[in-house]
Every structure is written in structure tokens, then in C-alpha cells.
Length: 229
Image (cartoon, rainbow, N blue to C red; front, side, top):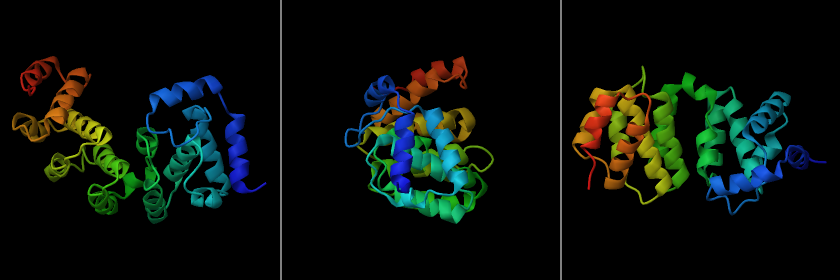
């Protein structure tokens, strides 16, 4: 049995058929892939085990994958890679095959947080991509790593300049600005007051802010007055 068959056998040993049906409804866009039905904690655990064993090269090269869970497993294995350059290369190769929000958002390499200068160069390239989930991943990385001590207002501008008809890009832009509102209010509020975002994204950002526990009630009341009609 080769490596790919062995990993697939492990995935099916973790199968929950009822959960498979739930996943198919929750994650639009995976219709090109078959869904086995494996819960995320089990996938994360398997990824850690496989990475620790060091026997994943064949699996990582086997793209595109057949099953949704293989993509998820791939994302979780990449997230375990300790060497930044190796990890960044693996991410770049895999992004071309990412076709849903779950795989995109759950791929979060730990080593990226320790190499923010290098990562920023990659983000500047990814954010200009024509691929929906490459752009979403870029904005997600800006949100995850550059809204605290490494914040620079120029990152807000990078995201605000994006224009897309893709729902999953616009949702991430809204998520980014809602998070930025909670963490970097003074720098972020002018983008809402100045209506710098596309109408749908502007209103979705305000909705996310209103739903956030990190934003106080007084600000929520004010933000509601800024909704575009």
C-alpha cells in the first residue's frame, strides 16, 4: 500500500457519515470533491501524527486531491511545517487547488508568525491574485498577523483597494475590517466614515461589528448610522 492509499484508509477509518451530510451543506464549493465526513479535531490530530512521522511528501505532491478531507489534511500538515521557506513554498503550491473557505481559513502555519517580514512579501503578491481563495488567504494572513504590534495603516489601504464580485473575498474583507475596528479603531474608522469600501462590504463590516463582543455598545449605535442604503 502506497502512502496516499494508506492515508486515505486512515481517513475512512475516522468517517462519520451523518457529519458528511452536514459538511456538504455547510461548505458550498466542495461539489467537485467527495466528502468522507471526518471531524476537524480528528483531522488535526492525524496531521500532527503524519507530520511527526515525516512520511507525507508523496501525499503533498498528489494534487489535486480527490476528497475534501484530503485537502483539509493537507492544510493542517502544511500548518505544522517548521521551516519558513519550505512552508511558504508548500502554501504557494497548494493555494492553486484550494476551492473552499474552510480549507482556506484553517490553513494557518505557525511558522508564519515568526517570519512576518518575509510573509508580508508573499501577502503582497497573493492579494493581487485572480484566484478567489488566494486573495482570501492573503487578507486572512493580514488579519491574523498584522493587526497588533506589527500593524501599519498601509495594510488597511491594501485591503480597502480590493474590489471583487466574489462573495468569499468580500466576506473576508468585511471580517478583516470588523476585526481592525476592534483592534485599531482610530486608523480604521475613517474607512467606514469615508465609505471607502464597496456598498455590500461596507454594510457587512458594520453588521459584523454590531455582532462582535469586542466592540462597545456606544460604537455599535454609531456604526449603525453609517450604513449605506
